Length: 279
Length: 290
Image (cartoon, rainbow over all chains, first blue to last red; front, side, top):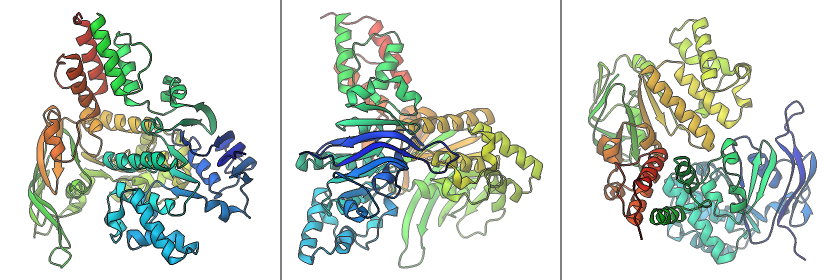
């Protein structure tokens, strides 16, 4: 029987009674081996969702389940050890004095024997391309490198699910590209299940499935193609369409009719090239 | 107000074993009324330059001329207070600096400190809260009850309330969603045009630099390696690559379009809108026949 790695069933959460719910009647599930992206504007409920997944908050209505069991205060620690989390600010999540100490931190807390620990730390750093930095001080690394070390820290615990909470939003373009590439490699090598929370639709485009939150509610769920067909509605929601889609809209607005909706720059240029010939 | 850096060098922890040179021989002129973008890879010295613009750091060699005042190594600077009123800096993640009980008090804090009468300071706060697109009730809330994006706006209002002549922006939209990013960047641009103040934008985003700036300075390994009109600076992909930078996305696509379709577009397309226009007009003006 196939169990969901994570599921939300009709989850509602309100911070205080007077205000509107931060999350209202939201349902979705994460299947083993998939990459799901949760996107939404600032204040759409993304962060509340992340806190509910990790048991920092519990829903007032509905249920959050991890690996088939409802998340409760009793099983919280056990369930959390199955989920690796990487947060937004690379500087706020380091505890170790060196890269390897940092990656080893959670393993030590979980009583992993020394030999195995060494192996897992090196393996995890290898996977994110940081094996040459074992004894470096984390605060001397670039933003992208820091986030890759943070991912290694999460991987060392061999999680069933890796949660990236705005993990690229504070990085420069190069750092962002490094982290995204790392995730793609992890996906190809080990089919790691990934849930990324982001407002970068360019990044979401790489996921298998996208869930769009708007004002605390689920607005849309589907493959990137299905979700981006909502086009201008996504823009009104404070999200940004991927570059190629923005460009094709602008070009159509100039009176050049483009067939379909190219999702990548390459497809768009291809379409323009054909158009140029058929004139 | 004009700011000019003349052969500025700066070392952290000078004359100690931990001395680290962050800037060397930086010369950069920021003309009054210009919109200057400072770009460069992480660690290139952008933020260190920024801290010289209102004398938070004093050069260890060379001089910085801010309006009518000169900040030089080894001299005791006078009237820094005046410089800091005229040059307002919006630091990265400025919401971390909020501290007052209410948003109103937080925005009024700077002006009151500089002797602006209370009612005037309050008027500024009310005006700014509207300008930044927040409801007026926000003024009575605690800044800590606001969302991240709202806190950012309040912090920006606090800087604008000083009515600076030069506005320095250090990655002012990092961490905001795309809509919030655009709103805030557009607001700065509008203020720049309306008030005629000098704007300095320190950014990782080549697209923002291309869209808003009329002058671009490139920092690389602690020195200013290139300064020029925005079109010039972004014209050469090879040169930017030497400094670990890329051309803005529309310019990249322009090149790929030109190569594939075999047509040169008019000029360099710095924004998505100008690229769309140029492509449309190229396609309209006669296609090739197969």
